[in-house]
Amino acid sequence: MDILELARQNQQKAWKILDSSGIIPAWERIGATVHLVGSLKTGLMAKSRDIDLHIYTDKLDIGESFSVMQELAERLSFKEVQYKNLIHTEEECIEWHVLFEDEEMHTWKFDMIHIRKNSRYDGVVENVTDAIMDRLTPEIRKTIIQIKFDVPEGISIPGIEIYHAVFTGGVSSYTELKQWIKNNPLTNSLEWLP
Image 1 (spheres, helix red, strand yellow):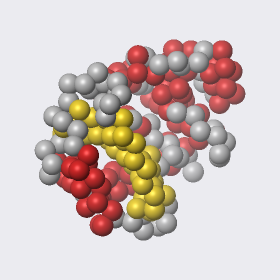
Image 2 (tube, rainbow, N blue to C red):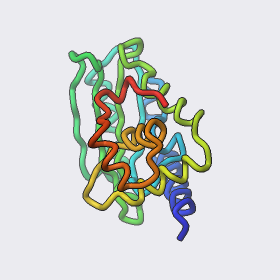
Image 3 (cartoon, rainbow, N blue to C red):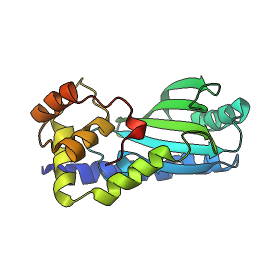
Image 4 (cartoon, one colour):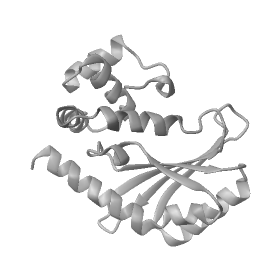
């Protein structure tokens, strides 16, 4: 099957899962504003079943954050939940990383980052996502998706490093990507824009 068609099918499935999960309305019930970021929003989801959400509230209330996760855990087939309290760091967030199993027994990862509005990183990833979408051409999209499919199983390379290599370095293959990352490490992904 053509990689672009396979990527399209994976993205279509991700949209259905996100919609049917009720994750966004669950967060909105506590007054949160939810932004989709990352590969699903940009259309660059390939074989990695990863859905990234940034969730903003005026204050970070651990109890409220846990109440949303409790509601979701009672309704959805979560297999694993990881919680990180970064409230008192420069990130000012609570990270939730959840493994979810769909009806076809595929495992999906939801990264839900609960961030205080007007904190240092408010909107930063959204700006990067929008910049990637603005500069994305059909050729660049195909290159990125091909590289993502070519990354061997068991090797994890963050999407942002692939985007950096393709947009900044003109990288066009997984082999070139490995060399690019070695010679041009992305030291702060939050400061890079394509």
